[in-house]
Structure formats: C-alpha cells, structure tokens
Picture 1 (cartoon, rainbow, N blue to C red):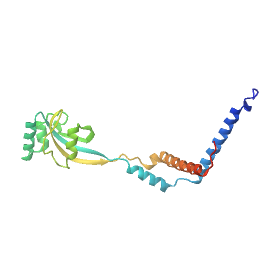
Picture 2: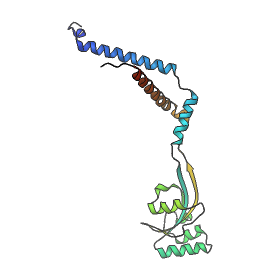
Picture 3: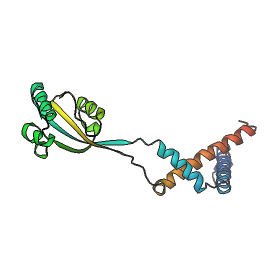
Picture 4: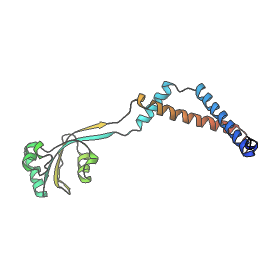
Length: 188
C-alpha cells in the first residue's frame, strides 16, 4: 500500500474478479442448498449407472490336450463310446497343469484363453463337448464346458454415494448456469 499498488488498475481488476468469483460461489451454494438431491433421484441415477456395467462371464471347463489332430479325434471317439472325460484326460492329456485333475481348468474368464480356444469355449452350451478338435499353439484340444456364470462388479450405492452426488449436482449446477446465461445480457 505504501508503494501505491492498491491503486493500480491491475489490482482493482483483480479485486473485482475476486468479488465476482465469491458472489458466483455464493449463488451456486445457494442453488445447491435450495435444490437438494433426493434419495429417489440418487437411486434413479445409480440404477442407470448399474445398467451400463457389463456382465463378466466365467467359464468352468475341462480339456484334453494332445499333440496331434489324430490323437484328438481318437479321444473324441473314446468319449462318444462313453469313456468318462476326466478319466480320458488323466490318461491322454499332455497339459501338466490340469491332467491330474481330469483336465479341470477351474473357473476362468474366457479372455484368459488363447483366441481359438476362447472362441470354441464360448460357443459351447453347459455340458457340451467340442464336436471337432481345437488347434492352438499348445496342440489339439477337446473342450468340455461344465458351467457358466455371469457376474457384475457393481459397487453398492453407499460406496459411491459421494461421487454420484457430486456428479449429479455438478450437472445440475451446469444446467442452472446455462439457464442463467441464456437469460442474461452478457457484456465483455
């Protein structure tokens, strides 16, 4: 002040800008106070959000892995004649990770499998075995689908309430500001 900085045009412009911002913030806070978000509105938005979350499918499968197509076709013939899948996998499969478990691969997301295996697996119905051997870089597979389950990783409403409230209120404030702008005579 001794240097006269408080009398400069820049300083006065900065003060006016700070006052305008403080006033704008008060207008927004008042709007939020007088237009609170109801639980019903929050639940509606939550339901819309949940509807956009994709389902993840997990597959419980078994397989028999052999080195050649001829061996795979022979395994298919043995299955058609009634040989139990798990027994045949223990006898013939070359997959060290699943052989001792009767070819059981456990529950997995289809995306964990190589493309040709994944394509064949996802086309099967529960309990079905591939009609033809499936070739991958590991060899030839006979695949049996035991089960499929769908899961959605959906957060509970209370877990995302603050973020959802902030998003909805932000959209409302934007609409309010736009309505004020459309009614105002703006000078620059």
